[in-house]
Image 1 (tube, rainbow, N blue to C red):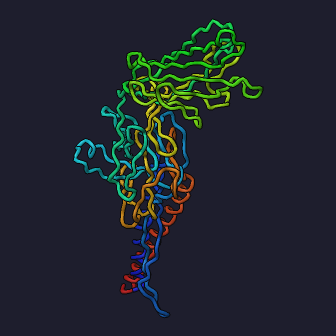
Image 2 (image 1 turned 30 degrees about the vertical axis):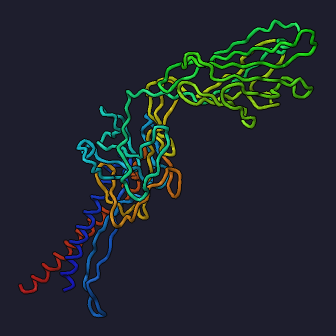
Image 3 (image 1 turned 30 degrees about the horizontal axis):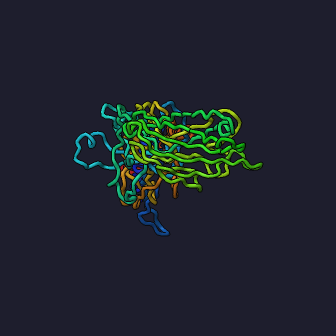
Length: 436
């Protein structure tokens, strides 16, 4: 009967609008929740059946979908481990309880933003109990090749704040000027000395001591030799000689003072292409750059003064971690008080064909589903994914003005459906009164 179907349609309209009110209220309640993705309610008509002579109201049904693919605006913070994904992709997280159990079964969940800080065990944990996950780096800071279609290589990011670290010296560069007057006839032949610090494998300070001895002209000669003997000793090897070289300098109009030749007496060979000599100190191989032939960089012989003008080296003493930083490519870097940084983890970005097909969980997290499709772990900033912004959080995607407008419409629709039910009731009452 048409009048009965009208009553059912009105009841279904009340139910559908009541459910839409729930969606709107949830969106408004989370308008200040970081990383919240708003939900959207849609109405779909239901057709029971009709013909030219009659019509039966089918009513309406409501479906809701969380728009996970939408991204909110980024807002700056003061914490270096507050992160947000700028663009497509999600960061992997897991539950603290699963990490504490320690059985290796870590469910992967996804987030687009999070505020992480180290807990008592050094894990990067959010205030909602989620642990950031990433690929661990090797001792030299490189990231091994991990499978990209599975979460098997991911580990909870754990930072040992009390960790000490140092880097041994492997390369050194000497920019030194030797006095040209020391190789001229009548010169005294003073030996010039230089000590260059380096750091061994244990972060201990050692020195490469260098002496430059001029070759004096033969008695009666009126020509400068422009030749020196360079002797290198290592304090880490009980002052043992690690290299001895004969250095000859140009005295031409265009190349005066530059190296003309380097002849090894002992120690490693000199590479004219790079200007380096290969030595072995107590902690291992050491490359020292003394300059290329006919090049003013490196060791020169000019004027009448000895001047170490540019001494550089790599390596560092032992230091403590003072800060954790996550860069735009997802590299988790430990910053030390000695001025060095070391990569300890890489945070990948998880991408799938249909982000809106993810299953929404608590605390703005999501899990993989059949509807979301197969996922792939990308380097941040590579492929279809965006990058990671630290010192930032993603705001809610809720537009309060839009939700309040929908709220007014929903209220009116609910009242109209209630009016339909009231009208049907009055019509049924009139039908009942026919018998009187």
